[in-house]
Image (cartoon, rainbow, N blue to C red; front, side):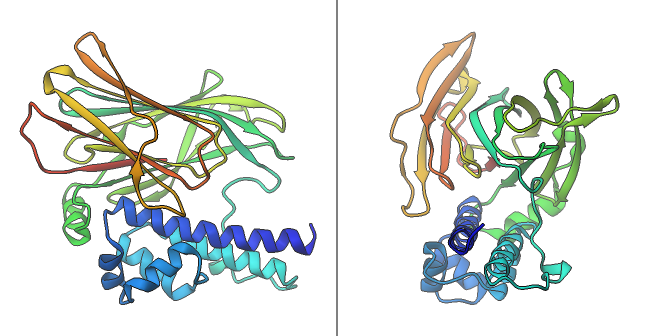
Length: 324
């Protein structure tokens, strides 16, 4: 890898840091002014960070993690940026372990999502979420694990109230009942981060009977599912594009008796939230109203959010949920 490639990696790491800030700010439903106040910065500084005009800093990363309760994901993006800079400078000494970027996948691996299909079913009390992804390994090493994320926020824009809610009503592994399969084999999983309202999980390409990594040039389907009660999940479903992705499909299925309506927004690193370019398609299936939305070749770091309300319920209190 030459100096130009190293410089590109530094720029990409800085862009990833900026996207992580914008992503969590939207997940937490915080305006730039509100986040700036929580962190002790001027609102313009948040704008400069998200646009990439200011470079990532350690102090900003730590304050942002604390203000938005991200499970240190912004800190890890800063570590990645520091590691990219160190490599570009050809430093002989590795950064201290506490600041070393964590590699999400094996060195030499490069994942592409050929197809990302998600379905959310609601029965009036429980949300059941099922994801199917066709992954392709375009790298030079076998892939042995895949990272997923579950994050919820019942009171967006009110982090103290939301944190208090989840301290009293945390997401639990028992209620999630997470399952995952690949090639017809059950996948083991390991918790990477376990917070009251935030989980990160490694899906492992192995189980008690053996291992089944997928190798360079191969494509495999993985499927995983979990459940969340509506007191903790709620009325939006967001997709953040964190790996190169060729096609995204989302289905939302609600009891028709609730008279659901659905709309959506798209946000990128360079633009605020705007309406989806195409409307979800509505169909009826045995007492359920199903909304389907698709897009091809989504931009890296784009975020797509589908929201809904139930006109027959009379409820107004917003709840939020997100998946990765």
